[in-house]
Image (cartoon, rainbow, N blue to C red; front, side, top):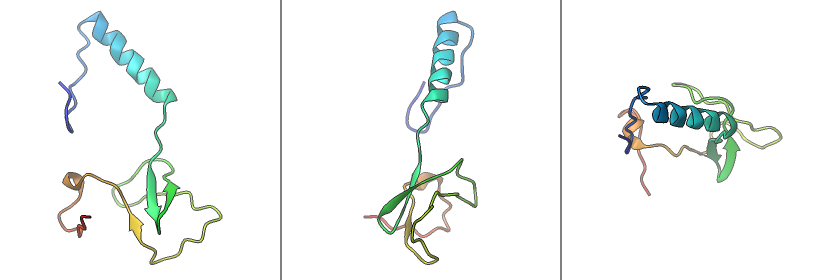
Length: 88
């Protein structure tokens, strides 16, 4: 069963399921989807993984300074309730 924010556990009893999961895992290795963060209407690539308290961006040769507006595209369901929300 798959759906919005739902993932079924791998059922490895049937050979067809084993092969499907193996194929999908191999595809994930070669297909790396990049995440981006918007700073002052310009997108910057996220390096590595997003942590609980930090994000590392590639801002090489860019004019980014403290206080610039940063926009993260996230599902509000996964953001702490103490974070201010702004919907547009």
